[in-house]
Amino acid sequence: MKRHLLSMNDLDRHDILTILDTAESMHDVQHREVKKLPTLRGRTVVNLFFEDSTRTRSSFEIAGKWLSADVINISAKGSSTSKGESLRDTVRTVAAMGVDGFVIRHSASGAAQQVSEWVDAVVINAGDGLHEHPTQALLDAYSMRQRLGDLQGLHVALVGDLTHSRVLRSNLICLKTLGARVTVVAPPTLMPAGIETWAASEGFTTSYDLDAVLPCVDAVMMLRVQRERMSGGFFPTAREYTVGYGLTRERLRTLQKHTVICHPGPMNRGLEIAADAADAAQSLVLDQVSAGVAVRMSVLYHLFAGEGSLT
Ligand code: NCD
Image (cartoon, rainbow, N blue to C red; front, side, top):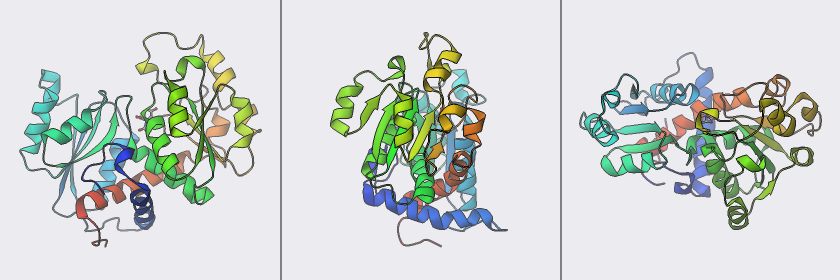
């Protein structure tokens, strides 16, 4: 395994399966009375979040704490970046205090990679602009595998605002590595530029017709309409988006019984996903959140403690 986790490309199939298997043993901690393993005692991990986050930040914090690391949270608001300090100066300042690792979320694609070049500490990418969000793809794979078994040969649809989705990019790599078949579905305005070439080289298919795809898949992942990243009008009205690309109550009925529904959150209920679908028995939304802690414990363990010292 590489030293940092910046992209899903840093992990080969063996690494991914190792992380998922370790996460399974970590998952039990959640149900214990005493939620503490001594694995990362004496290590300090800094969560450096320059973009809003509920689940990713708290999930990394819980994961670190359950492994006995000291976890510090720094967000853009309230840090010296709001006084004009550069990212480089901020991370080098914090690194000089002797921290062992950074978990970083930033609006610039490539920010985590940059940080890994500036500091000696381990760097984990928790979302960099439109680029990647590797631990999200790992927890998605974990949740799907838990419900559906081995992902080899399964058909997964990734649906929604693909242009602005780092979750899409990480999932395409992860799912391909694990042998799943992927179809991406979006309105033409939210399909990333050059998707056809990308699809041909990476071996996934594209579609503009959600109704045709839904009955054929084993898992459907709805991606959030990321209005905060949109400068113009990508679709006429919210209602039209839902009619064409929302997982509505009517579409929910067209899924096979075993098909699972994923959403990385935060959800726009009523826009890309109806409440009936989000709360359906087939929905893995809360399983994904729960898996997030276990998967991040596993990632922290493998990057910091190394092989062979699992407690
Ligand atoms: C995603 C993100 O921030 O990239 N959310 C998450 O980490 N759970 C997706 C999103 O914001 O829609």
